[in-house]
Amino acid sequence: MSDRLDTLTSWNADWKGLRAVVLGLSVTGFSVADTLAELGAEVLVVTERADEEYERLLPVIGARLWTGSLETVPAELSGFAPDVVIASPGFAPGHPVIEWVRDSRIALWGDVELAWRVRDKVLRPDGTPAEWILVTGTNGKTTTTRLTATMLVAGGLRAAPVGNIGTPVLDAVRDPEGFDVLVVELSSHQLWYLGLQTGAEPLSPYAAVCLNLADDHLEWHGSFQAYRDAKAHVYDNTRVACVYNKADAATQAMVEDADVVEGARAIGFDLGVPGPSEVGVVDGILVDRAFHEERRTSALELTTVAELRDQGLAAPHMVANILAASALARSIGVEPEAVRTALRSFRLDPHRIEVVAVAEGVTWIDDSKATNPHAAASSLAAFPGAVWVVGGLLKGVDISSLVADRGVRSKAAIVIGADREHVVAAFSRHAPEVPVFEVDADETEDVMARVVELAAGIARDGDVVLLAPAAASFDQFSSYADRGRRFAAAVNERIARGADGEHDDDIEPSAGDRA
Image (cartoon, rainbow, N blue to C red):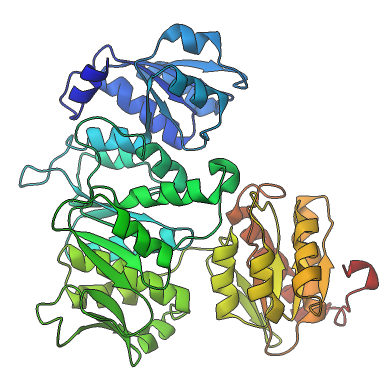
Protein backbone atom coordinates (compact mmCIF):
# COMPACT_ATOMS: atom_id res chain seq x y z
CA MET A 1 0.00 0.00 0.00
CA SER A 2 2.92 2.38 0.61
CA ASP A 3 3.63 2.37 -3.13
CA ARG A 4 0.09 3.50 -3.84
CA LEU A 5 0.21 6.20 -1.17
CA ASP A 6 3.37 7.54 -2.79
CA THR A 7 1.34 8.20 -5.96
CA LEU A 8 -1.33 10.20 -4.11
CA THR A 9 0.34 13.58 -4.44
CA SER A 10 -2.31 15.38 -6.48
CA TRP A 11 -6.01 16.11 -6.36
CA ASN A 12 -6.16 14.38 -9.74
CA ALA A 13 -4.52 11.16 -8.52
CA ASP A 14 -6.60 7.98 -8.14
CA TRP A 15 -7.90 8.15 -4.56
CA LYS A 16 -10.92 5.94 -5.27
CA GLY A 17 -11.33 3.00 -2.94
CA LEU A 18 -8.62 4.15 -0.52
CA ARG A 19 -9.63 2.96 2.94
CA ALA A 20 -9.16 5.98 5.21
CA VAL A 21 -9.91 6.42 8.89
CA VAL A 22 -10.36 9.94 10.24
CA LEU A 23 -9.67 10.27 13.98
CA GLY A 24 -11.65 13.05 15.59
CA LEU A 25 -14.60 15.11 14.38
CA SER A 26 -13.83 18.72 15.15
CA VAL A 27 -13.83 21.33 12.38
CA THR A 28 -10.50 19.89 11.22
CA GLY A 29 -11.70 16.29 11.29
CA PHE A 30 -14.77 17.14 9.26
CA SER A 31 -12.69 18.96 6.66
CA VAL A 32 -10.58 15.81 6.29
CA ALA A 33 -13.58 13.52 5.99
CA ASP A 34 -15.28 15.83 3.50
CA THR A 35 -12.14 16.04 1.35
CA LEU A 36 -11.54 12.29 1.31
CA ALA A 37 -15.17 11.56 0.49
CA GLU A 38 -15.03 14.05 -2.40
CA LEU A 39 -11.90 12.27 -3.66
CA GLY A 40 -13.73 8.93 -3.68
CA ALA A 41 -12.09 7.26 -0.69
CA GLU A 42 -13.94 4.93 1.69
CA VAL A 43 -14.11 6.97 4.89
CA LEU A 44 -14.70 5.86 8.47
CA VAL A 45 -14.73 8.59 11.11
CA VAL A 46 -13.81 7.40 14.60
CA THR A 47 -14.44 9.71 17.54
CA GLU A 48 -15.44 9.61 21.17
CA ARG A 49 -18.33 11.99 20.57
CA ALA A 50 -19.83 13.77 17.59
CA ASP A 51 -21.35 17.19 17.21
CA GLU A 52 -24.98 16.78 16.14
CA GLU A 53 -24.51 18.77 12.93
CA TYR A 54 -21.45 16.80 11.84
CA GLU A 55 -23.19 13.54 12.69
CA ARG A 56 -26.04 14.55 10.39
CA LEU A 57 -23.72 15.62 7.57
CA LEU A 58 -21.40 12.59 7.46
CA PRO A 59 -23.86 10.20 5.73
CA VAL A 60 -24.75 13.01 3.32
CA ILE A 61 -21.14 13.24 2.12
CA GLY A 62 -20.81 9.43 2.07
CA ALA A 63 -18.75 8.82 5.21
CA ARG A 64 -19.42 6.37 8.05
CA LEU A 65 -19.28 7.25 11.74
CA TRP A 66 -18.31 5.28 14.85
CA THR A 67 -18.48 6.83 18.33
CA GLY A 68 -17.40 5.40 21.65
CA SER A 69 -14.52 5.03 24.05
CA LEU A 70 -11.05 5.18 22.54
CA GLU A 71 -9.19 4.02 25.65
CA THR A 72 -8.61 0.85 23.63
CA VAL A 73 -8.67 0.26 19.87
CA PRO A 74 -12.28 -0.44 18.85
CA ALA A 75 -12.98 -3.54 16.78
CA GLU A 76 -14.73 -1.38 14.18
CA LEU A 77 -11.43 0.44 13.56
CA SER A 78 -9.16 -2.59 13.35
CA GLY A 79 -11.73 -4.49 11.31
CA PHE A 80 -11.92 -1.66 8.78
CA ALA A 81 -8.27 -2.41 7.88
CA PRO A 82 -7.38 1.17 6.93
CA ASP A 83 -4.73 2.03 4.36
CA VAL A 84 -4.17 5.37 6.06
CA VAL A 85 -5.25 7.03 9.30
CA ILE A 86 -5.54 10.82 9.40
CA ALA A 87 -5.63 12.13 12.96
CA SER A 88 -6.93 15.40 14.30
CA PRO A 89 -4.20 17.35 16.12
CA GLY A 90 -5.63 16.58 19.55
CA PHE A 91 -4.46 12.96 19.41
CA ALA A 92 -1.14 12.82 21.26
CA PRO A 93 1.71 10.44 20.34
CA GLY A 94 0.99 8.32 23.42
CA HIS A 95 -2.72 7.87 22.70
CA PRO A 96 -3.61 4.13 22.53
CA VAL A 97 -5.05 4.43 19.01
CA ILE A 98 -2.02 6.34 17.70
CA GLU A 99 0.33 3.76 19.23
CA TRP A 100 -1.70 0.95 17.58
CA VAL A 101 -1.57 2.68 14.19
CA ARG A 102 2.20 3.07 14.36
CA ASP A 103 2.78 -0.45 15.70
CA SER A 104 0.60 -1.78 12.87
CA ARG A 105 2.72 0.12 10.30
CA ILE A 106 -0.34 1.89 8.95
CA ALA A 107 0.37 5.25 7.33
CA LEU A 108 -0.36 8.08 9.78
CA TRP A 109 -1.01 11.60 8.48
CA GLY A 110 -2.25 14.89 9.83
CA ASP A 111 -4.65 17.17 7.99
CA VAL A 112 -1.80 19.39 6.78
CA GLU A 113 -0.10 16.55 4.91
CA LEU A 114 -3.35 15.69 3.14
CA ALA A 115 -3.80 19.36 2.23
CA TRP A 116 -0.29 19.55 0.79
CA ARG A 117 -0.90 16.45 -1.33
CA VAL A 118 -4.08 17.89 -2.88
CA ARG A 119 -3.02 21.54 -3.03
CA ASP A 120 -3.28 21.55 -6.83
CA LYS A 121 -7.10 21.37 -6.87
CA VAL A 122 -7.29 25.08 -7.72
CA LEU A 123 -4.31 26.57 -9.57
CA ARG A 124 -3.01 30.10 -9.99
CA PRO A 125 -3.13 31.76 -13.43
CA ASP A 126 0.39 30.46 -14.14
CA GLY A 127 -0.81 26.87 -13.61
CA THR A 128 0.91 26.31 -10.24
CA PRO A 129 -0.59 25.79 -6.77
CA ALA A 130 -0.58 28.52 -4.14
CA GLU A 131 2.68 29.04 -2.26
CA TRP A 132 2.72 28.16 1.44
CA ILE A 133 4.29 30.23 4.21
CA LEU A 134 4.47 28.46 7.58
CA VAL A 135 4.28 30.14 11.00
CA THR A 136 4.80 28.58 14.42
CA GLY A 137 6.14 29.51 17.84
CA THR A 138 5.15 29.22 21.48
CA ASN A 139 3.74 32.75 21.45
CA GLY A 140 2.56 35.19 18.79
CA LYS A 141 1.88 32.80 15.92
CA THR A 142 -1.76 33.80 15.34
CA THR A 143 -0.93 37.51 15.32
CA THR A 144 2.05 36.95 13.01
CA THR A 145 -0.03 34.78 10.68
CA ARG A 146 -2.67 37.48 10.42
CA LEU A 147 -0.06 40.20 10.00
CA THR A 148 1.67 38.32 7.19
CA ALA A 149 -1.57 37.65 5.33
CA THR A 150 -2.61 41.30 5.70
CA MET A 151 0.72 42.46 4.27
CA LEU A 152 0.44 40.05 1.34
CA VAL A 153 -3.05 41.30 0.51
CA ALA A 154 -1.84 44.92 0.74
CA GLY A 155 0.86 43.91 -1.74
CA GLY A 156 -1.76 42.77 -4.26
CA LEU A 157 -1.67 39.02 -3.61
CA ARG A 158 -4.64 36.78 -2.94
CA ALA A 159 -3.73 35.43 0.49
CA ALA A 160 -5.44 33.89 3.50
CA PRO A 161 -4.48 33.00 7.08
CA VAL A 162 -5.32 29.33 7.65
CA GLY A 163 -4.50 26.28 9.75
CA ASN A 164 -4.39 26.42 13.53
CA ILE A 165 -5.75 29.96 13.33
CA GLY A 166 -9.24 28.52 12.74
CA THR A 167 -9.83 27.86 9.03
CA PRO A 168 -8.67 24.34 8.09
CA VAL A 169 -6.03 24.28 5.37
CA LEU A 170 -8.16 21.83 3.40
CA ASP A 171 -11.03 24.31 3.22
CA ALA A 172 -8.66 26.91 1.71
CA VAL A 173 -7.16 24.40 -0.74
CA ARG A 174 -10.66 23.56 -2.00
CA ASP A 175 -11.86 27.16 -2.23
CA PRO A 176 -12.91 27.59 -5.89
CA GLU A 177 -11.65 31.20 -5.96
CA GLY A 178 -8.10 30.05 -5.24
CA PHE A 179 -5.18 31.88 -3.61
CA ASP A 180 -1.68 33.02 -4.49
CA VAL A 181 -0.35 32.36 -0.99
CA LEU A 182 -1.59 30.50 2.07
CA VAL A 183 -0.14 31.64 5.39
CA VAL A 184 -0.42 28.49 7.50
CA GLU A 185 -0.30 28.70 11.28
CA LEU A 186 0.91 25.37 12.67
CA SER A 187 0.67 24.09 16.22
CA SER A 188 3.33 21.80 17.65
CA HIS A 189 0.76 19.00 17.37
CA GLN A 190 0.36 19.50 13.62
CA LEU A 191 4.13 19.75 13.22
CA TRP A 192 4.64 16.47 15.06
CA TYR A 193 2.45 14.77 12.46
CA LEU A 194 4.33 16.51 9.63
CA GLY A 195 7.51 15.02 11.04
CA LEU A 196 6.15 11.56 10.20
CA GLN A 197 6.18 12.24 6.44
CA THR A 198 7.95 9.51 4.49
CA GLY A 199 6.48 9.62 0.99
CA ALA A 200 7.39 11.46 -2.15
CA GLU A 201 7.04 15.24 -2.37
CA PRO A 202 7.03 16.21 1.32
CA LEU A 203 5.74 19.63 2.27
CA SER A 204 8.16 22.29 1.00
CA PRO A 205 7.16 25.83 2.02
CA TYR A 206 8.26 29.03 0.33
CA ALA A 207 9.21 30.53 3.69
CA ALA A 208 8.85 29.61 7.36
CA VAL A 209 9.33 31.03 10.84
CA CYS A 210 9.52 29.76 14.41
CA LEU A 211 8.99 32.91 16.44
CA ASN A 212 10.21 31.66 19.81
CA LEU A 213 10.39 28.58 22.00
CA ALA A 214 9.43 28.04 25.64
CA ASP A 215 7.78 25.32 27.73
CA ASP A 216 4.27 24.49 26.51
CA HIS A 217 2.14 21.41 25.78
CA LEU A 218 4.58 19.18 27.66
CA GLU A 219 1.73 16.86 28.67
CA TRP A 220 1.05 16.22 24.94
CA HIS A 221 4.65 15.80 23.76
CA GLY A 222 6.04 14.17 26.88
CA SER A 223 9.14 16.36 27.18
CA PHE A 224 10.50 19.75 26.22
CA GLN A 225 12.93 18.13 23.77
CA ALA A 226 10.07 16.42 21.94
CA TYR A 227 8.17 19.72 21.84
CA ARG A 228 11.26 21.47 20.48
CA ASP A 229 11.83 18.78 17.85
CA ALA A 230 8.24 19.09 16.66
CA LYS A 231 8.52 22.86 16.29
CA ALA A 232 11.74 22.47 14.31
CA HIS A 233 9.87 20.66 11.52
CA VAL A 234 8.50 24.03 10.41
CA TYR A 235 11.78 24.63 8.54
CA ASP A 236 11.94 21.24 6.77
CA ASN A 237 12.46 21.64 3.01
CA THR A 238 12.05 25.43 3.06
CA ARG A 239 12.91 26.84 -0.35
CA VAL A 240 13.52 30.60 0.04
CA ALA A 241 13.57 32.08 3.58
CA CYS A 242 14.02 30.56 7.04
CA VAL A 243 13.11 33.41 9.38
CA TYR A 244 14.33 33.05 12.97
CA ASN A 245 14.46 35.06 16.19
CA LYS A 246 17.97 36.33 16.97
CA ALA A 247 16.88 36.82 20.58
CA ASP A 248 15.98 33.14 20.90
CA ALA A 249 18.98 30.88 20.32
CA ALA A 250 16.74 27.82 20.00
CA THR A 251 15.17 29.11 16.78
CA GLN A 252 18.56 29.87 15.26
CA ALA A 253 19.72 26.34 16.10
CA MET A 254 16.61 24.96 14.39
CA VAL A 255 17.54 26.79 11.18
CA GLU A 256 21.17 25.68 11.39
CA ASP A 257 20.08 22.05 11.79
CA ALA A 258 17.27 22.14 9.21
CA ASP A 259 17.36 20.16 5.99
CA VAL A 260 16.36 22.88 3.52
CA VAL A 261 16.36 23.30 -0.24
CA GLU A 262 19.70 24.55 -1.54
CA GLY A 263 19.70 28.32 -1.79
CA ALA A 264 17.30 28.98 1.11
CA ARG A 265 18.46 31.93 3.21
CA ALA A 266 18.48 32.38 7.00
CA ILE A 267 16.85 35.69 7.91
CA GLY A 268 17.17 36.95 11.49
CA PHE A 269 14.95 39.42 13.34
CA ASP A 270 15.01 41.09 16.73
CA LEU A 271 14.59 44.53 18.30
CA GLY A 272 18.23 45.51 17.78
CA VAL A 273 20.15 47.01 14.89
CA PRO A 274 20.11 44.50 12.00
CA GLY A 275 23.03 43.27 10.00
CA PRO A 276 22.84 42.17 6.35
CA SER A 277 20.15 39.48 5.85
CA GLU A 278 18.29 40.68 8.94
CA VAL A 279 15.37 42.92 9.90
CA GLY A 280 15.39 45.04 13.03
CA VAL A 281 15.09 48.49 14.59
CA VAL A 282 17.37 51.53 14.16
CA ASP A 283 16.58 54.70 16.12
CA GLY A 284 12.89 53.84 16.37
CA ILE A 285 12.59 52.82 12.70
CA LEU A 286 11.78 49.23 11.65
CA VAL A 287 14.06 48.41 8.73
CA ASP A 288 14.79 45.64 6.23
CA ARG A 289 18.39 44.69 5.46
CA ALA A 290 17.46 41.24 4.16
CA PHE A 291 15.55 41.79 0.91
CA HIS A 292 17.37 44.85 -0.35
CA GLU A 293 20.02 44.91 -3.07
CA GLU A 294 22.14 47.40 -1.10
CA ARG A 295 21.71 45.54 2.19
CA ARG A 296 25.44 45.65 3.02
CA THR A 297 25.45 49.45 3.17
CA SER A 298 21.85 50.58 3.73
CA ALA A 299 18.35 49.56 4.85
CA LEU A 300 14.76 50.03 3.71
CA GLU A 301 12.31 51.68 6.11
CA LEU A 302 9.17 49.65 6.87
CA THR A 303 7.47 51.73 9.58
CA THR A 304 8.29 53.48 12.85
CA VAL A 305 7.72 52.62 16.48
CA ALA A 306 5.87 55.93 16.81
CA GLU A 307 3.37 54.89 14.13
CA LEU A 308 2.95 51.50 15.76
CA ARG A 309 2.32 53.18 19.11
CA ASP A 310 -0.53 55.14 17.55
CA GLN A 311 -2.02 51.81 16.46
CA GLY A 312 -1.55 50.16 19.86
CA LEU A 313 1.11 47.85 18.37
CA ALA A 314 4.28 49.10 20.06
CA ALA A 315 4.64 46.52 22.85
CA PRO A 316 8.05 44.87 22.40
CA HIS A 317 6.68 41.42 21.59
CA MET A 318 4.31 42.98 19.04
CA VAL A 319 7.19 44.79 17.33
CA ALA A 320 9.02 41.46 17.12
CA ASN A 321 5.96 39.81 15.54
CA ILE A 322 5.72 42.66 13.03
CA LEU A 323 9.37 42.24 12.07
CA ALA A 324 8.90 38.50 11.55
CA ALA A 325 5.79 39.03 9.42
CA SER A 326 7.55 41.75 7.43
CA ALA A 327 10.43 39.38 6.67
CA LEU A 328 7.99 36.72 5.44
CA ALA A 329 6.08 39.20 3.29
CA ARG A 330 9.23 40.80 1.90
CA SER A 331 10.61 37.35 1.02
CA ILE A 332 7.84 36.92 -1.52
CA GLY A 333 8.19 40.40 -2.99
CA VAL A 334 5.80 42.65 -1.04
CA GLU A 335 7.07 46.23 -1.20
CA PRO A 336 7.89 48.22 1.98
CA GLU A 337 5.06 50.70 1.37
CA ALA A 338 2.56 47.81 1.27
CA VAL A 339 3.92 46.58 4.60
CA ARG A 340 3.38 50.05 6.05
CA THR A 341 -0.12 50.30 4.57
CA ALA A 342 -1.09 46.94 6.07
CA LEU A 343 0.08 47.98 9.51
CA ARG A 344 -1.99 51.17 9.41
CA SER A 345 -5.18 49.12 9.13
CA PHE A 346 -4.21 46.14 11.30
CA ARG A 347 -6.04 45.44 14.53
CA LEU A 348 -5.13 42.85 17.13
CA ASP A 349 -7.38 39.88 17.79
CA PRO A 350 -9.80 40.21 20.68
CA HIS A 351 -8.30 39.04 23.99
CA ARG A 352 -4.76 39.89 22.91
CA ILE A 353 -3.54 42.81 25.10
CA GLU A 354 -6.96 44.37 24.55
CA VAL A 355 -7.84 47.43 26.62
CA VAL A 356 -11.23 46.66 28.14
CA ALA A 357 -11.71 49.98 29.93
CA VAL A 358 -9.99 52.89 31.64
CA ALA A 359 -11.85 54.12 34.70
CA GLU A 360 -10.81 56.11 37.78
CA GLY A 361 -7.25 56.04 36.49
CA VAL A 362 -7.10 52.21 36.29
CA THR A 363 -6.52 50.47 32.94
CA TRP A 364 -8.08 47.02 32.62
CA ILE A 365 -6.39 44.80 30.00
CA ASP A 366 -7.60 41.46 28.63
CA ASP A 367 -4.78 39.22 27.42
CA SER A 368 -6.70 35.99 27.99
CA LYS A 369 -5.00 34.61 24.90
CA ALA A 370 -1.78 34.42 26.95
CA THR A 371 -2.35 30.70 27.59
CA ASN A 372 1.25 29.82 28.46
CA PRO A 373 4.04 31.41 30.53
CA HIS A 374 5.94 32.66 27.49
CA ALA A 375 2.94 34.66 26.28
CA ALA A 376 2.26 36.01 29.76
CA ALA A 377 5.91 37.04 30.11
CA SER A 378 5.53 39.33 27.09
CA SER A 379 2.47 41.00 28.61
CA LEU A 380 4.14 41.45 31.99
CA ALA A 381 7.16 42.98 30.26
CA ALA A 382 4.86 45.47 28.56
CA PHE A 383 3.01 46.28 31.82
CA PRO A 384 5.44 45.93 34.74
CA GLY A 385 3.89 46.55 38.14
CA ALA A 386 0.42 45.42 37.06
CA VAL A 387 -2.13 43.70 39.25
CA TRP A 388 -1.73 40.30 37.61
CA VAL A 389 -4.67 37.89 37.16
CA VAL A 390 -3.06 34.49 36.65
CA GLY A 391 -3.90 30.79 36.63
CA GLY A 392 -5.94 28.03 35.04
CA LEU A 393 -4.69 24.72 33.62
CA LEU A 394 -0.90 24.79 33.44
CA LYS A 395 -0.63 21.86 30.98
CA GLY A 396 2.30 20.34 32.83
CA VAL A 397 4.37 23.53 32.64
CA ASP A 398 6.27 24.90 35.67
CA ILE A 399 5.34 28.55 36.20
CA SER A 400 8.15 29.20 38.70
CA SER A 401 10.58 30.91 36.31
CA LEU A 402 7.85 33.27 35.08
CA VAL A 403 7.02 34.27 38.65
CA ALA A 404 10.71 34.74 39.50
CA ASP A 405 11.50 36.73 36.35
CA ARG A 406 8.32 38.79 35.81
CA GLY A 407 5.83 38.15 38.58
CA VAL A 408 8.18 39.52 41.20
CA ARG A 409 7.51 43.03 39.84
CA SER A 410 3.72 42.73 40.08
CA LYS A 411 1.81 44.98 42.46
CA ALA A 412 -0.27 41.94 43.44
CA ALA A 413 -1.37 38.60 42.03
CA ILE A 414 -4.93 37.32 41.85
CA VAL A 415 -4.83 33.56 41.28
CA ILE A 416 -7.65 31.60 39.60
CA GLY A 417 -8.08 28.11 38.21
CA ALA A 418 -7.63 24.45 38.99
CA ASP A 419 -3.85 24.66 39.39
CA ARG A 420 -3.91 27.53 41.90
CA GLU A 421 -1.74 25.73 44.43
CA HIS A 422 1.18 25.56 41.98
CA VAL A 423 0.94 29.28 41.24
CA VAL A 424 0.64 30.22 44.90
CA ALA A 425 3.61 28.00 45.77
CA ALA A 426 5.69 29.67 43.05
CA PHE A 427 4.98 33.10 44.52
CA SER A 428 5.77 31.85 48.01
CA ARG A 429 9.18 30.62 46.85
CA HIS A 430 10.19 33.26 44.33
CA ALA A 431 8.22 36.45 45.09
CA PRO A 432 7.18 36.32 48.74
CA GLU A 433 6.88 40.11 48.96
CA VAL A 434 4.10 40.20 46.33
CA PRO A 435 0.59 40.06 47.85
CA VAL A 436 -1.23 36.99 46.54
CA PHE A 437 -5.00 36.48 46.57
CA GLU A 438 -6.85 33.29 45.61
CA VAL A 439 -10.26 33.13 43.97
CA ASP A 440 -11.80 29.80 44.90
CA ALA A 441 -15.21 30.37 43.29
CA ASP A 442 -16.64 27.12 41.96
CA GLU A 443 -19.12 28.61 39.50
CA THR A 444 -17.85 30.06 36.22
CA GLU A 445 -20.22 33.02 36.59
CA ASP A 446 -18.66 33.96 39.94
CA VAL A 447 -14.95 33.78 39.06
CA MET A 448 -14.46 37.04 37.20
CA ALA A 449 -16.86 38.99 39.40
CA ARG A 450 -14.67 38.10 42.36
CA VAL A 451 -11.48 38.83 40.39
CA VAL A 452 -12.68 42.30 39.50
CA GLU A 453 -13.89 42.95 43.05
CA LEU A 454 -10.43 42.06 44.40
CA ALA A 455 -8.56 43.98 41.71
CA ALA A 456 -10.63 47.11 42.27
CA GLY A 457 -9.67 47.00 45.92
CA ILE A 458 -5.98 46.82 45.06
CA ALA A 459 -5.52 49.06 42.01
CA ARG A 460 -5.05 52.81 42.33
CA ASP A 461 -4.81 55.72 39.91
CA GLY A 462 -2.22 54.89 37.23
CA ASP A 463 -2.31 51.12 37.79
CA VAL A 464 -2.98 48.37 35.27
CA VAL A 465 -5.05 45.25 35.97
CA LEU A 466 -3.76 42.60 33.58
CA LEU A 467 -5.53 39.33 32.78
CA ALA A 468 -2.62 37.25 31.43
CA PRO A 469 -3.33 33.79 32.84
CA ALA A 470 -0.26 31.88 31.58
CA ALA A 471 -2.54 28.83 31.50
CA ALA A 472 -5.30 27.18 29.53
CA SER A 473 -8.91 28.05 30.30
CA PHE A 474 -10.81 24.77 30.11
CA ASP A 475 -10.95 24.15 33.86
CA GLN A 476 -13.42 26.99 34.41
CA PHE A 477 -14.32 28.41 30.99
CA SER A 478 -15.25 27.09 27.56
CA SER A 479 -12.27 28.83 25.90
CA TYR A 480 -9.76 31.63 26.38
CA ALA A 481 -12.27 33.87 24.55
CA ASP A 482 -15.00 32.98 27.05
CA ARG A 483 -12.58 33.77 29.87
CA GLY A 484 -11.76 37.15 28.34
CA ARG A 485 -15.39 38.02 27.62
CA ARG A 486 -16.39 37.25 31.20
CA PHE A 487 -13.53 39.38 32.53
CA ALA A 488 -14.58 42.31 30.32
CA ALA A 489 -18.23 41.91 31.31
CA ALA A 490 -17.35 41.95 35.00
CA VAL A 491 -15.17 45.04 34.55
CA ASN A 492 -17.85 46.92 32.64
CA GLU A 493 -20.55 45.90 35.10
CA ARG A 494 -18.54 47.27 37.99
CA ILE A 495 -17.79 50.51 36.13
CA ALA A 496 -21.48 50.89 35.29
CA ARG A 497 -22.43 50.49 38.95
CA GLY A 498 -19.92 53.19 39.82
CA ALA A 499 -21.27 55.49 37.08
CA ASP A 500 -24.80 55.07 38.52
CA GLY A 501 -23.59 56.12 41.93
CA GLU A 502 -23.97 52.61 43.32
CA HIS A 503 -20.28 51.83 43.48
CA ASP A 504 -19.09 50.78 46.94
CA ASP A 505 -16.00 52.24 48.51
CA ASP A 506 -12.79 50.56 47.41
CA ILE A 507 -12.71 46.99 48.66
CA GLU A 508 -9.71 46.10 50.74
CA PRO A 509 -8.58 42.50 50.25
CA SER A 510 -9.52 40.44 53.25
CA ALA A 511 -7.08 38.32 55.20
CA GLY A 512 -8.99 35.27 54.07
CA ASP A 513 -8.10 36.00 50.47
CA ARG A 514 -4.39 36.28 51.09
CA ALA A 515 -2.35 33.17 50.29
